[in-house]
Image (tube, rainbow, N blue to C red; front, side, top):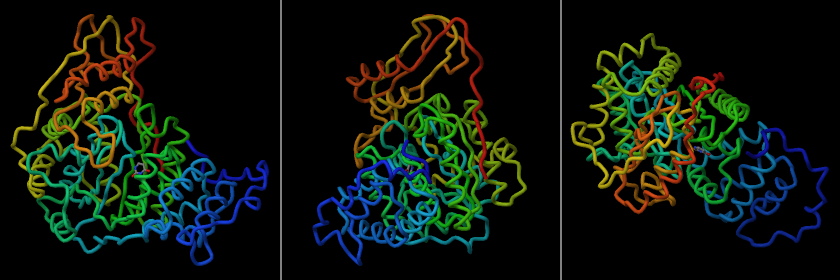
Length: 458
Ligand code: URA
C-alpha cells in the first residue's frame, strides 16, 4: 500500500533532483505554465500538488495531451508518496469534471447506492439492489466488469440469457421511477468520469491499484458523478481484498466518507471481512444462482447476513422506515429482481449456462476447516475462466468454484471440498494447485470463524 494521505513529507531525505533534472521536453505535454514532467517530479520528490496542477494534469490526460506513460509515472509517484486530503479532494473533483454528472433529484423516491471495493464471491449487489428497491428506494447501481481475481457484477448478470448491461440515461430514469422495479444495475456510460476509466486501466497494468488516494478518488468520482443522494460503502479487508489490514481499510473508508460528505452525498462505510470468500460460489452463473437462492429465502448465512446489514444501512440513509428482512421474507424482493432482470432484456426463468466440464477436489485429512483463503479461491475461479486477464476478454459464464465446506465446518477424509467448473479442462491443474494452498484442515481448531462486519465509519 502506498503512503497514507498526508504522509508525503520525505523531501528532506532526497537529493535535489528536480533542479538537476534535464529540462522538460515535448510540447504535447505542456500547457498553461504546467508540464507533465514537472508535476511528476514534484510528486516524486514528495511535494504537494497545487489545485491548478491537479486540474491541468487530469484534464490534459483525459484529452490525450498527457501520455499514458506520464500518467503511469505520476500514479506510481502518488502510490509511493501519498496525497493529503486537499489533493485527494481536488483530484476527485477533477475526475468528476472530466465527464458529465447525472442528476436523479427529481425522482419521486430517494436514491441510494452501494459500492464494494471488491472481493471473492461478492455477489451481494445482486440480491441487495432489488431488495432495497422493494423497500421503497431508487437504486442506480453503476457496476463494473471483473479484472484479476475479483469478479465483476456485470459479468455475473451477463450470464442470464438476454440480459443487457447498457442502459441509456432516459431508460435508467424510467426504470428507477417505476415502483415495480426501482433498481437498475448497468455499465457506466463513456462520459461518466472518463479520466478514471483511462487511469484505472493504466493502474491495473502498472502495479498502482493499491493506493488509498487513487482508490478513494476513483470510486468516489464515479459515485458522485452518478448522482445518488446517499451511498453505503462496503470496504473489504483481508487476504482477498485490495487492503489487507483493518487500519488501511479504515483509512480508505474515512477518506471516502469525507469525500462523499463534501459533495453532499450522505455516505457511510462498513468494513467487512474478506479473508474467506462470501457464500459458497465464486464464478458468474454460479453466483447468480446463489443470489436467486437468497431472494427465495434461502442461501448461505454469510450472504444473507451481509445483504441484510447493507440493506438496513441503505434504507436508513434513504430515510425509509422499512425492515428489509420482512421484504426479503415475503417475496417482494424476488418480485423486484424479476422485473429488474426483465427491464434489461433478461429472462429470469431461463436456465443459467453451465460449464462443460467439472472436477471434484476432496479433503486429504479429517478435522475442521480453519482457513479458506479468498485469494486462492479467486485465483482458481479466474484460472478456470470466470475472470479475465486483459480488458475486453470474454469470460466463461459457467466457470468457477463451488465450495462444499467453509471455515468452521468439520470435514472427513475424501469428502468433496470443491467442485471446479470450466469449459477449458486444461485449466484444472492450475486451479487445483491454487486451491491446495488455500485450505487448512486442523484437528484442534483455534476458534470459530471471525465476524463478518469489522467496523463502521460515518
Ligand atoms: N474500484 C474502483 O473503482 N477503483 C479502484 O481504484 C479500486 C476499486
